[in-house]
Image (cartoon, rainbow over all chains, first blue to last red; front, top):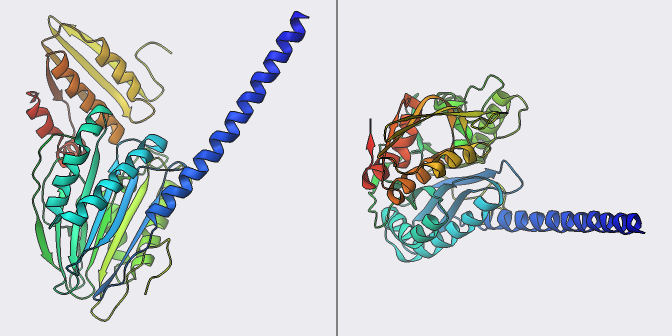
Amino acid sequence: MYKDKLTYSRQLDQEELSSMDKTLKREINLARNIQSQLLNGKTPVFQGGKVSGASIPARLIGGDYYDFYPLVNGKLRIVIGDVMGKGIPAAMLMILTRGAFRSAAETTKSPAETLMSMNQALYSDLRILKSFVTLLCADWDPASSVLTYANAGHHLPLFIQAKQEKVEEVPKVKGIMIGGLPNQQYTNKSIQLSNQDTVFFYTDGIIEALNEDKEQYRLERLIQTLLLHKEKGVEEIQTSVLASVEAFTNGLAQRDDITMVVLKINDQQVEITSLNSPLMK
Amino acid sequence: MKAGENMLLTVEKEVQHRTTILKVNGLIDITTTNLLDVYLEEINGMDTVILDFSGLEFIDSTGIGAIMNAIYASEEKNFTLKLQGIDELTDELFETVGLYEILAAFQGEVI
């Protein structure tokens, strides 16, 4: 009798566990779909160039983030970011970050102001949660082809000048991570872009990808890859970088979320798209 | 597996008077940071805590989060936090995210 009860009890636990497992998987998939749809939302059409974004989470869902926000003055605000950690906790904070960006982008005049506003909005929550977000925010003005950017602890974008055989970081601008300290001021810096110039924004999942010998992909390999493919279009550049990282890691599991945004100036081009969303014209 | 060891991270603890030195060897990422957190939680009554990264092979954003926890702990438990043995790549990463500025703001010191 006792054994029967015990057996019954164990079977019930397994059933409950199985049911919980199914529920959890279903909810993770729903969360993944929500994140994917938010990440790959509508993107506006602009004259003067083309931009594309791609994000590949290391797990089912990730903590990387990119977004495009068209401003009423005709500029396009771009943001790319990396939430500390991975998986569901990072994904939850990524959604929080997205909300803060969308709200700040609406009311602030420059990338530096956007970052300042986001830090003000997120600092208390991030401090309680012992987390942080690195962000690079930039305004691209299609009319003047000027890119203005500000940095909150993120890797600087790479500037691929069409007229020169070199790829280098955009001029340095410092700023600490969102959630690091309260009341932070950030600084704007600008560069003039010319026809066929490309700017490559990225997260550390690319340069920190490890191969079998525990070597990192590193910035030098990324620069070489961009040099090799600089003549290509924005989506092809993304595909080429991903292929290069995959070849380097040689089938090893992806350790960190990988995200990139590519902006390419084309005086004749009149379109903007995101890699995973339909072209909006 | 001994206490203080993880498959990918080991932490060597040395106490000299009122100074604790935690030497980290290996990787600090999402799979290993809890080990460093355990050592930080144990710290009490110290004037100085030194995190020695001379054996560090890799650190990601979660690892930086663990150092942020150490910075917060330095304020809560009133000790000076020092970072040492940082290689060029890691130094660049800490500089980029603003870790040194945060540490300075919390009255720490980098050596």
